Length: 95
Image (tube, rainbow, N blue to C red; front, side):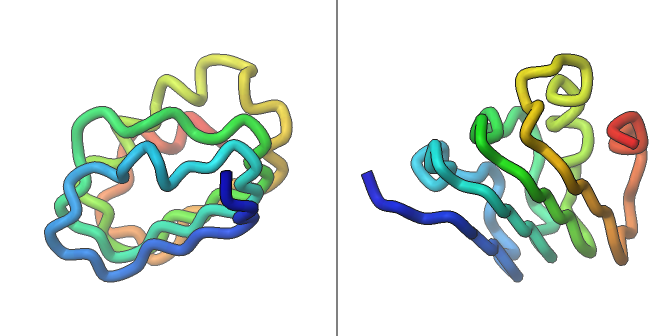
């Protein structure tokens, strides 16, 4: 398995779902920015994720991440940031 600690997905206008194979088990930082077609259920976040940054237009991504905020399976998550967001609804439950 590749040893990737940081992943940035930016300006993917047609990306509807983040492929599960991009979420490596040892991923520590994830940035998703300007992907307006994201929606539906996304893969589970990696268990060792420490930093999650959501920026700009992310379609319905905030709704698909809601199950993460209701369990403690991501106890390593130290930083969660939403910035320049145009459609923030239920993600506020993370805070």
